Length: 386
Image (cartoon, rainbow, N blue to C red; front, side, top):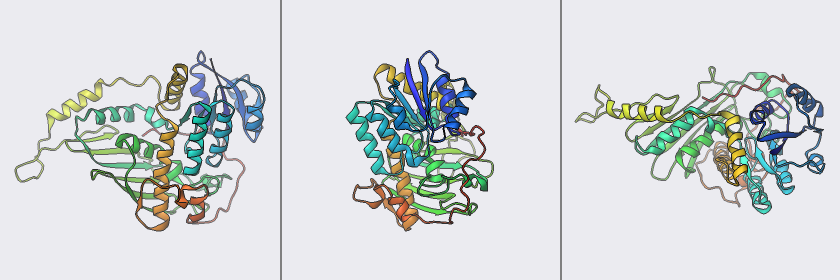
């Protein structure tokens, strides 16, 4: 039985708790922690949990309660400190996105994982959704040929009051806008599908709808990869309809989530024929249909994977290394957007943007935060998959 503590009982904690409660024979929630303990008490009552509540994670770690796994579900600026303290106490960690607020902090977390012989998992629950899970398998089958271009539409919509919450909309506390806090999922998927980071990034940032926020509310970026393939990423909280997608143009066919394959056939003059490559399309659809659905999706699917890894002494699908890789690409996007220059990867340790506070130091303040509400609605967070 894996003993679990949850640090941070805001909106995203519901996804963690519901996922954990799916496996009562495998794990048990033994502690809740929040700097506002009344929030944790409310969560405790809502889910009928039988565990103590703490107002400080260090008190929780020093309490003598046996904890195998700590879920870190706090605002981004505190992820590194809480994760490192938990690992130093001998606990495994599953950290919400983004992994940290700097690459320097990511490396400190990875060092703590190695030094303490524990496991650091990174939340990127969209990998555990059927459309993306199956898309990855079709791409890896090479039935459509090599990747030539990827289009990421991480399109969300948030009303003006979204940035009234005290920690949102600031470079210090939220550490970025939708590029970091929304597109992080799609950027993780991009790295997963491509198998690694690009070598260059060019980006433009703007804030067009939220004048109560320092950070961007939309960014557009182009990535270049070894071998010549390109990717473009839109990260937004100004898109009505929240129509999210990944479109992968391979040498022989278009693959996508939502699934909508296309395959052209060339005439002698190079223009596409009216008839499509029906044989390849049939093969792709048949292969897609043959891939079994995941038993669990989203946070529950990732929690199942982490529990399985801990039970078997293995690594989870999404590790701290993956979390750092995602933040490295996001850091490059911000550096390019702030400087107006093309940025090369990897980002070196001597680079100011690698260091903690580097992004904040150079960040464009599109507006100054005008409201700092202690709480907004405590309704469950809606988590889109595509």
